[in-house]
Length: 268
Image 1 (cartoon, rainbow, N blue to C red):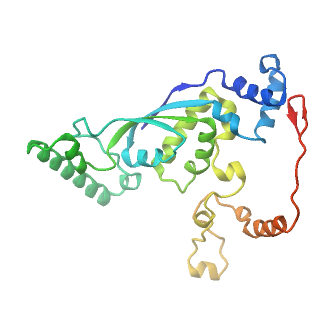
Image 2 (tube, helix red, strand yellow; image 1 turned 90 degrees about the horizontal axis):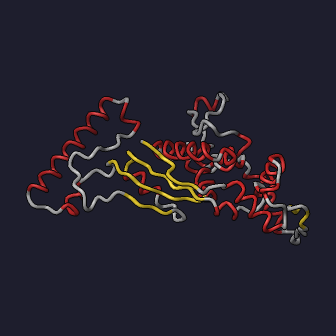
């Protein structure tokens, strides 16, 4: 797998700071000191996220599976161009082996046999006169492919919360970690925006899964320490009772309303 950042918005930090200044009649980022920029950036991290849509990143992902790209393109706020399987000949096309098979001789053998059978049958279809676009129906869905994808920073931030999560299949985690590293190499200030949900928010994105108690009945009976399904889950992430108490309180009281007043490019 290879993930390359092939294009990104230039001068992105000043651009983002400038969007805030435009809203709040703040100073031009070009006139700010680095300390002032950092102060305003921290302010922006705690306000509305729409300015982050001004910054774009275009990636090229190579050696990834079609099953992965099927998941990737479900992010509807991205834009994509993918290697076609309709118009190119696919015999001998590499197929991405799932990580779980690599250290299991039985699974790996079954997998290699199945891939060889599919490739042989593809060649037989072609030899019998099948069209490329029809013969591809037999190609394994984990065949290698290449895709280019464009996301803005707000979308990448939202994706990070779930796609860096242990609940996400390994290939997607790997691809997103590489994409994140590529972004931080050019925009290190984006680190806090590209974090898994538990780090970004202090809560588990999938608490029913992550907080599941994996102890067997005997261990539960003797009070052995809880083993959560997600190794990163912490008991304090379970806020269901607190959220329910707040829900009742919120809807049983009159609305509250802020009164923002801009001052030196900030409000509240």
